[in-house]
Length: 426
Ligand code: PLP
Image 1 (cartoon, protein in one colour):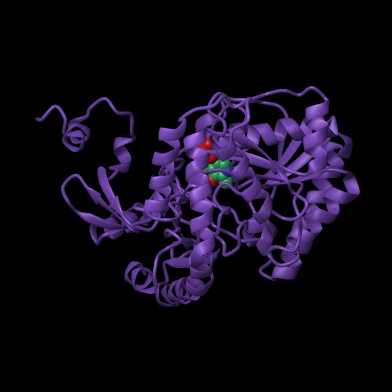
Image 2 (cartoon, protein in one colour):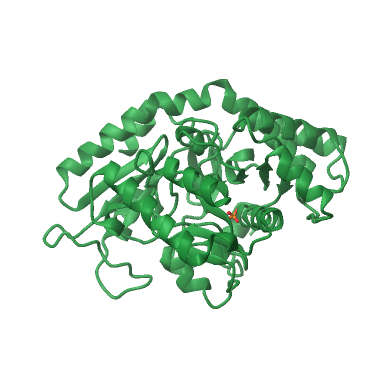
């Protein structure tokens, strides 16, 4: 093996930590919406890797901006000013809901959520954050405690922070036993109020939720749900934090997923798509009031690589690219995904539900004879053909992501995918 052939070295690696049960494709190259493995097989990348390669794999403007920044100055302390970081913060203030203005940069989505929680606790002088069952907010010590999907919890429960997070039920029919969207929104709102009152409103700093649930099922809230949540936050003086780590930057057809609802959050956390995954970057966008409170109360935290200049250059170029027709593409092509998936549901007994928004869709499978969801082999004994669907799709040249719980797959194409590619994947 040549010493300098990174592709072959990677193929021969026995030291890299991955889960062999998942039999991951060994991806060596990418181009637009496709990736190629070390054997030269090509796949449509319809999970955008981890819901993040939104602009595809060969955006020259982003690559060029990173290169230029690395040559100008690759790193400036996160505690100091530098133009590229300030430009990106200004761009974020332009696209965020009007009440949000100041960005604190971080590195990953987990860390952004932990920082938002620290800001909220500091501002509200209250210890608890409410999150939903069937949610994912990260896997680190603090963010792991916020995550409410049963599989991640089964893995990290022993190690996540044990206090400061309480869970409530998501607005899905299974949790409330009604299919009527308005009734579902009403019951889920009533339940949330019950949880707030029982936890003690004064002890709750924030409610943190994904505008459209991501890995745990790609389910949007029923109409009116977010109005109930906003009203409850206002009534009980609780901050609403939108976790936009997946839904941010066009995935749901607006800059931020919460903009597809009629409410403004008090903070937004973001990561993944901000740079279209060309470099790690995350952050929290807050109101001027929270920014000034946190700063003047001497709450002074930071991370060495928070707002890394090369990542900020990637972010700035990525945001320019999103405004150049990419979000419109999501809006225009959403109908292709929606109708194609609905047709699949109508024609296959084993598909029990499809739902989503923009370019984020979940397909749920159930046993057609009993109507029960398949078991998830990661937490249960039992049959689950969903892994076979993912494998067979891969054999036919399309990558999809597995949901958590594992009775569903998640479809999240790069936001540049065109109609032909969507139809091919469907
Ligand atoms: N929040 C959401 C909604 C996510 O989907 C994820 C990761 O998938 C995270 C937070 C954690 O982000 P990271 O993996 O960058 O720490």
